[in-house]
Image (tube, rainbow, N blue to C red; front, side, top):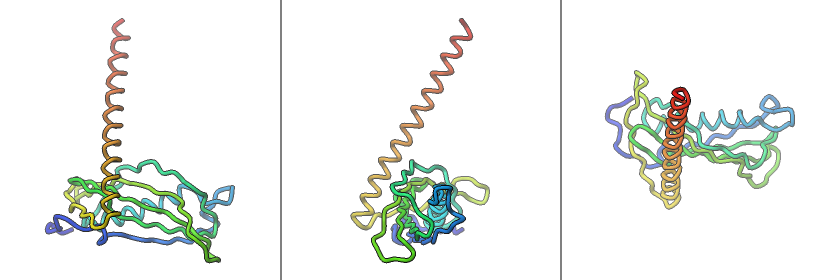
Length: 179
């Protein structure tokens, strides 16, 4: 880990693509690939992107909703493409797009799912450390940055609403105990 990490970095420097041929040991009882297998690979790809971008260790803080659009079948080649969409002081949103195609035929790739994960860069003591700011270069990068900011505001609003709800519940319980 270098203390002279850049203050900014374009998304293209840390993008990652990974392909995985699914096998029988990835399957559930229906013969499709377990969602957890896909999610594990998503987390791995996003973790490498986060570590590359931040110049050191980074840990998963959250994963936004992940909707599977089509099932992945045994024998499919699953492709994961990840990049940094947004950066804060020590956190980063990593987007991963998942597509699949058959291992034994030529045909169009099918969009399986997209996932958005938040990682926090950590130092040797496990404490948050600063990350280089992401520099969107293309129109696609700028769109991804805007959408990441929307997701972040939703995460923060949801957290604020949950905290307020819990505080209200605690007040109601205290009032009931007094009555």
